[in-house]
Picture (cartoon, rainbow, N blue to C red):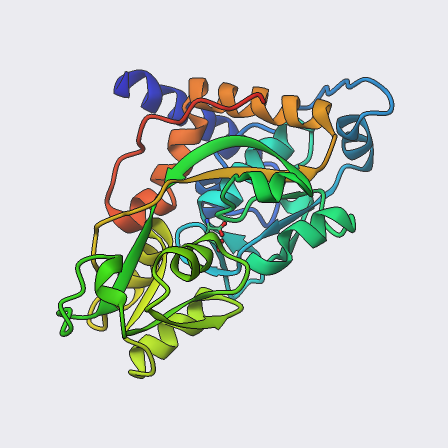
Length: 296
Ligand code: GLU
């Protein structure tokens, strides 16, 4: 299984490297970030979102800009991370090259609104699938399963082992996120501080303004990896956070297309390669078994 996966990933990388040699400006680094071949002869039924996007040759993707390993804006202005790679895989299947994607920062609280208002074509942003959100938008996927965890100051001076230990402590999370909702609902004795993005929570923990930060384990892993002398991960996940790709409500064809594309990427090794080159590289973990997509 591993051999097949790597063989597929290297074959895909080879294709991209070959493509780069004919395009000035592309670097090998770009190729490593984009181990997918951009479809050249796309043909979608007229009137579908796929046909519209393929015709436009460009699409707008909402993602995070401050989450190392999933969506982090580089000095060059483009983001990198697992979510970014998943978005590139979907765009490639529409015939859209990575450099033709417009990236828009979507923070936790504005994702549904950005999709509803058509400001983005899809959101790939550590976005938990749930019924509340499904009232406003639809989700393809899941393409990853995270779990809520806690980040504390290095050495865990307060001995926080799980969410019960947050009673009477100052814990930071983000407005409009499922982890904030989980604390508010099930751990009301915790003092919740909310910002719009997780990097501000990390700053607050570093400054001693809060005792802990809570969100998905993989987001916290990226923050700990960036400041191992300052932060520790408790490592005791207590919720399930299946990550989906947010799209406009009722666009069933687009949802089925993205689900098909995810399954293909699981098969070809492109999904695992995306993991290995981003979140996997930061956390030192191998790609897990991908979750089954939910064609609800
Ligand atoms: N996955 C959770 C959510 O969608 C937390 C991460 C985030 O805020 O993006 O609310």
